[in-house]
Image 1 (tube, rainbow, N blue to C red):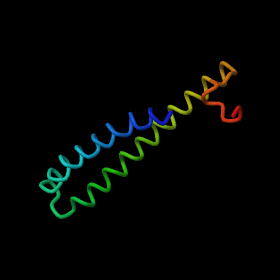
Image 2: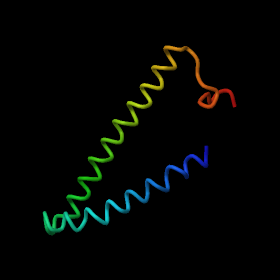
Image 3: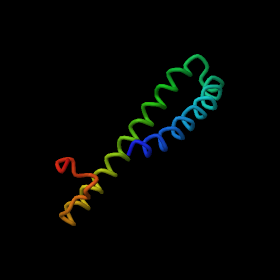
Image 4: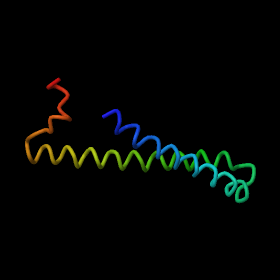
Length: 80
């Protein structure tokens, strides 16, 4: 599981870093001195969208567990 985390976190960090390098100069040209505030707002919106996506993924997983009435061994925290 640890390898999977690093395999997904490293590219994600690279994408975020590239996005910041591109967005900040664009925001500076568009909103001037309010670019930091605009960037914070964009981060808040992105976090909110991510929360909705994570919730939907977890809800669909739990719905599948309820329908099949079984839990995959890897997700069963009580079997350890």
